[in-house]
Length: 114
Image (cartoon, rainbow, N blue to C red; front, side):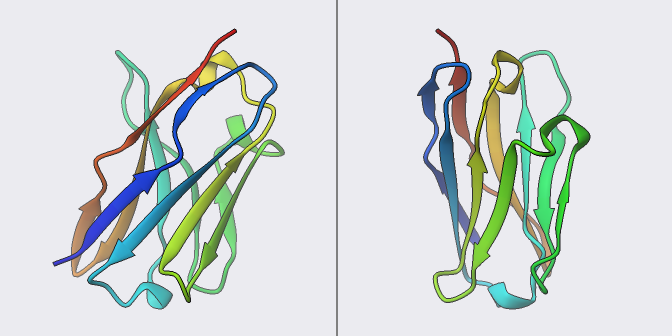
């Protein structure tokens, strides 16, 4: 059974930084292409960033130049470094990994406010 556990969310001021982590268990992590998604109240869930098995990243236009996705295959973990955050980044952030089927974490709340 694949399990994804996100952590690192919280309250941060505009312009600040936050790092999210997602630990994946029950999957051959190194062959997966995990992604971070977010969902704000009243909005659909949207892709923030993903990273291929070879480490190639992909970003939504709204976060390019501010967020960085990375992975540590030895720790079965994918990270999302969020810099220069803005109020519009406020959302629940979810980790997603396709391994035999679509797998999602429960999410971690990120709130950007002064």
